[in-house]
Length: 235
Ligand code: FES
Ligand code: FES
Image (cartoon, rainbow, N blue to C red; front, side, top):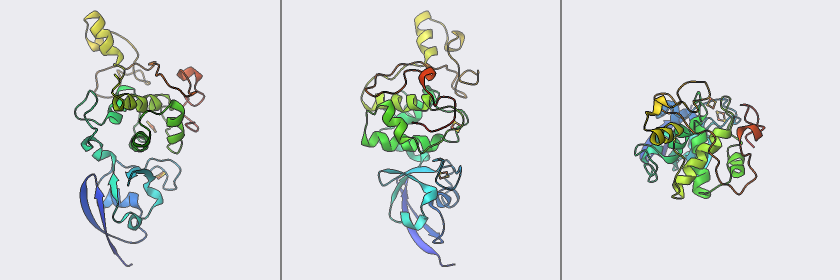
């Protein structure tokens, strides 16, 4: 089959590819560029796992041919920590949205997470201080089968705090340790959804009940959230 030469700027680096016209952008990203952080959950545009940030918009890369992206600038999850706003939170090595997902326990298996992060990036570029409802609307094309959406919304709100120079919530264990002089692991507190000690390797527990001030009508707690059972639409 005829091959086409295309050029993509991916995570700030110009990359030249030779692809068949039928090659999907997601396959070019994962297989030709070896950037496997962009996931494939359905290949039919339903799950959002393949979402990347392309020319200022979140796009599902399974719904585009690679040749349609010729000349585009694409950011994948691998490039998030190199963006100008990276390191503006508490962790110098992470983008605030990545940090938010870690601190607010926005993931369990993590399969949906790169797509959620890229959808969150596109939202915050357009609207740096969204309501819960606006976040839910924006991630409604991204499915998570593990967490429900409450903590994903909180993760993006955490990043919005950073974007707006507000203090994001402390992980609960650190707050407790600071209060009683103990160690983060010794103070009890709320653990990850599976009963472990929080996100893998973090050694920290998180404040799942932090009440974000919003102007929207989003639910105040997981108990009020009809979508927090892990299924259904994010809205
Ligand atoms: Fe693209 Fe599911 S893999 S939307
Ligand atoms: Fe498992 Fe979202 S964390 S699908």
